[in-house]
Amino acid sequence: MNAESEQRAHWRNFLHAVIFEAETPAGKWFDILLIASIIASVFAVMLDSVSSISSRYGSFLNGVEWFFTLLFTVEYFLRLSCVDRPRLYATSFFGIVDLLAIIPTYLSLLIPGTKYLLVIRILRILRIFRVLKLVQYMGEAVLLLKALKASGRKIFVFLFTVLTVIIILGSLMYLIEGSENGFTSIPRSIYWAIVTLTTVGYGDISPQTSVGQLLAAFIMILGYSIIAVPTGIVTVELSHVSGRHTTRSCRSCSAEGHDSDATFCKYCGAEL
Image 1 (cartoon, helix red, strand yellow):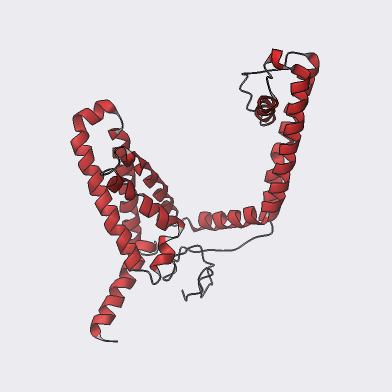
Image 2 (cartoon, helix red, strand yellow):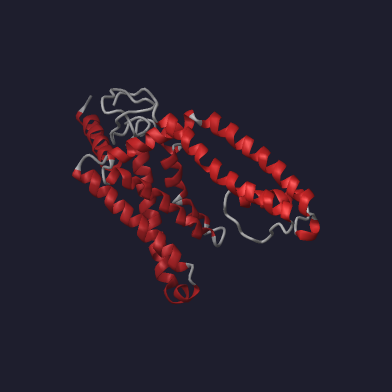
């Protein structure tokens, strides 16, 4: 490897450490400034949507919007340039969000009004978990995702059962109350059953007969009893998963959340 290639590799490693990692002071400051820029850009977009402010400072806010868009565009391409497999980063969650954060401004040149979609930039603040090095929270987030994935079938069966019960109870309420009491159709009665079972209780329609009120009381009590079921399912799965994770980012696919003793990326297999 000649001197030019070594220098290029050195700069790629440096950029990767600054942009993707939070283990160094430079990387931490980069992410802090990035988050501050994200908040400022979202705040500018929100202000621009207020007509009284837009009429007075519209030109200034438009300039601010373009400044941040160009800044984030440069940052996006720097991210692509310092990973070994840019396509994997571009199709990852943060890669898609980073792209969506800059597209609306360019689209606004062709389609007026799309610039307000820039509020999606607020999603990028999720990087704050790396900035503050809250490793324990990142680890818990990974564990929670594993538990949710493991309990997916149980939760699906539970939700299907609840849906079946709601359809039955809504149909019963339609037969009991009828259209004269506001239950004009089975779908509307099912809507009422959902609102009641989830303890939301809008009150836009309510049973008037004694039998209907008795059924409503049963649904309310049932609602409180089933709320804890999904929590219990996930809690059981959480007890089955464990692990310790770091903020290290894979040089190849930019994935994070690796185990503290990991040598290779668990997503693409590249050496860490």
